[in-house]
Length: 163
Image (tube, rainbow, N blue to C red; front, side, top):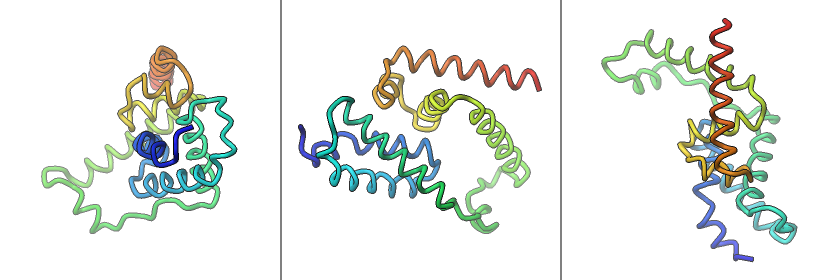
């Protein structure tokens, strides 16, 4: 068994990317990453070794995220001043609103997928992870991740064609 410092160095970035895919927020992902490793330190003696340590850490991270969602700790609303600062000078508020509506539609469509397909989509699109990394995180093969991603995209296309 590796010591916790080696585990942290090896998997910190992976856990952060995974949490960012779930949360879509850098600060929350960072906080939850730290919490994940704090729990891992306390619970390392309970790790049985029947799965990869990265999978175990991702499970801890996912449970922390669900726990936070249940508590209702969501992002605060952005003020108009902050929004104006984020808008490039050549984009209008209308452009930003349209893009946001399209993004919301896409995420609603993704939510209609089964849990594993959603996770693969988030890890691939938001986390910019390759299929090898996705397979490792989810305890599956890279080919499984690739096929799941393709099928999920096809389902989203079908939903949009039917509307």
